Image 1 (spheres, rainbow, N blue to C red):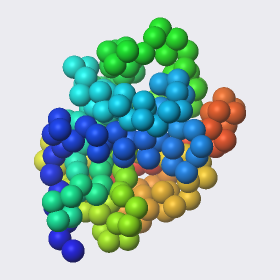
Image 2: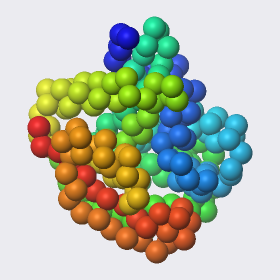
Image 3: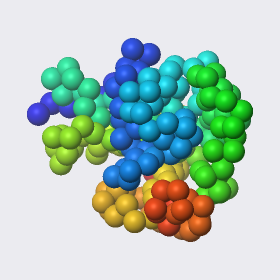
Image 4: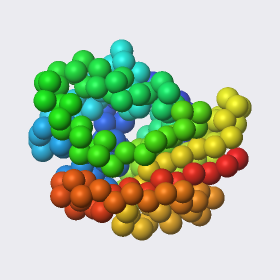
Length: 207
């Protein structure tokens, strides 16, 4: 099986939306975007996430931050990498308002930010690492990560970080197999109340 890795383009919006939603739910009934976008209607969420990937505000879910894995010309996986100093909380808020979110979105974001870490702005963050069902264990995510780390190194980065939910054992194990190590764990009552997960784990890799 030949895997091709390429940069995402604006027309990938619908596929990116699907992977972002899949990643944010991570086996849970509700994901971050169900709460932030204030709806559990998949069709509506996917349309809004597609718009979010194309906003003028360069938020972390912007298509420019994504690599896409293809097999036989078909997109099968994604990995997002972004700089916290550019994709700030304010930029995310601006992007959400750009796609039509009301002023109450600030309050809804609290469930995420209540479980926040002080991130080093000079690091690169990895997120939305996902693959289509039927393509697990064929090296899609490993190849996406290899390409992302290579690109990061060429840009002068030496450390990358990722946030994973406490209890997401499969995802944690995968990151650790790639060389990531646990830096810090944070339990958050509000996060647990909404999502049923105790909080988040911060992982990092030096390369």
